[in-house]
Image 1 (cartoon, rainbow, N blue to C red):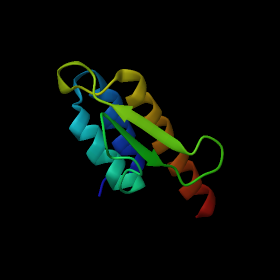
Image 2: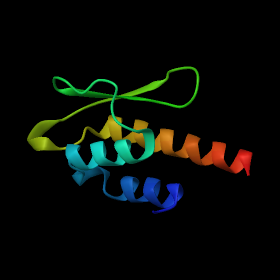
Image 3: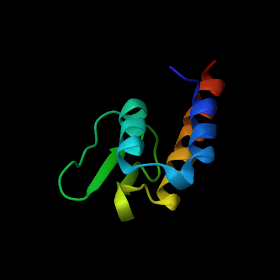
Length: 87
């Protein structure tokens, strides 16, 4: 599996051309199955307090929305920091 930092960097690099399905796969890999899987939204639970979710929805032409990719990148960075703090 890729390091979290590598995954975040790859998302940054390809954020303008990332499909919604690819973003869903990344979220499932990191956060587990979505707690809401019906309708157009996928809601993923985060393993920390505060705003404990990422809510994603497909944009035009099946692409991931840019601001939602940024939310996933921020969550990856937060996970990476938590792993570093616990090491």
